[in-house]
Amino acid sequence: MKKWITYCWLVALTLISAPAMAQETEYQFGIRWSVNGLESSLYIQGIMLDFTGVPSNFDRRQPISEYIKNGSNAIDLRTWRYEYDPEHEVRVSLLYWEPGQNPNTEASTAFEVVMMPGVEDAKPEIVSTDPAAPLQPRESEIRFKSNEDFDTVHISFNNRQPTPTWCWEEGDVLRDNDATRNSLTREYRRLHALFAAGDNDALLAAASTRTQELALASGTPEEYVRHRFSYTMYFDNPDVYQLRDFPEEPLTLKLAADNRVAWLTTKGVNVPIAFSHVGTEHGTSFVRPYFIRRDGQWEICR
Image (cartoon, rainbow, N blue to C red; front, side):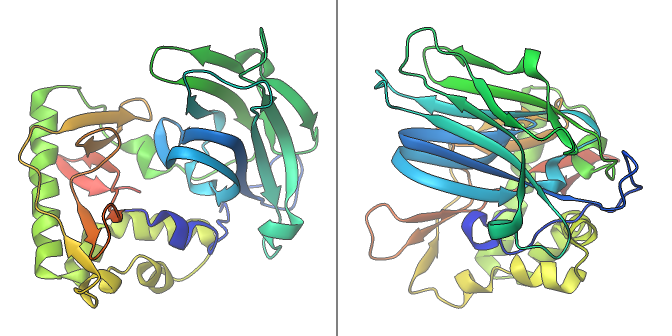
C-alpha cells in the first residue's frame, strides 16, 4: 500500500544484484517528470505511481528501483486536455545514482525525453543520453499516442544492471473477469474491516511481501519499512481522518504487469479504501494496495 508523498523520496532503493557491464557500483534508480499546467498520471509497467487530476506545474521525483526489471521496461505519462497550447511541455528523465549519494542533488540522468503535445506533428524527442548508464532508451519504441480520453508519452527502455525478481513478476497471470474481481473485492473488504478495527499490526502483516522486498531493495531493516508504512496516523487522529464506508456499487478491476498485478477502483482512479479529511469538502487520503495472487492467495505486492 503506497503513501505516495510521505514515502516517495525518503528511502532511496538499492538493487541487490550481481554486477553488470563490468561495473562495481550497483546503482539506484529514479524518475523525474514535469508537466507545465497539465493534468497527468504516471505508470510504470502499467502500475500507477502518481495521479494529478487538476492542471499542475511541478517538477517531481520518485525512486523506482523496486519497479525495474531485467531487460525491457516501460513508462507511460498520460495527459488529457481538450486543446494543448504550443508551450505545453512534458519532460521525463530516468535517473541513477550510487548508494549513499543524495538523489536530489547527486543523481545522474540516464536519458531524458521531451514531448510538446501542442505542436503540430510533434514527436517525443530524446534530448540527452548517457551511454554509460545502466538504463538505456529503446528509441524505436518511444512514441506519443492519442485517443479520446487521454494522450500518452510511452517510453520503453532497457535495464542493463541485473535486478532481483520482484513479486509483481511472479504472481499468477490473472483473468479480467467477474470471478477475479469478486475474489479481490472480498480481500479489499477484509482489509477495510481491519482499518475499521484500527488493527495496524494485522494490516502490516498482510503487506509482509511488500515489506520484505522494499527492505531488500533499500538495504534497510524491515522494521524501518514497516514504520514508514504504519497507519497509526489515521487511527490516532479520528478527529482528522474518518474511514469511508466500503462502496456498494460494483468495482472495476485493473490489471498491469502482464496481468500479474491487480487492484480495484470505484470511479476514475478512486479506490475502495479511503479516509475523508474531517472539516474539508474534498480532502481524501486513498489507500492503494497493488496485489498479486500466488498459491491461490492474494498478496499485497506494492
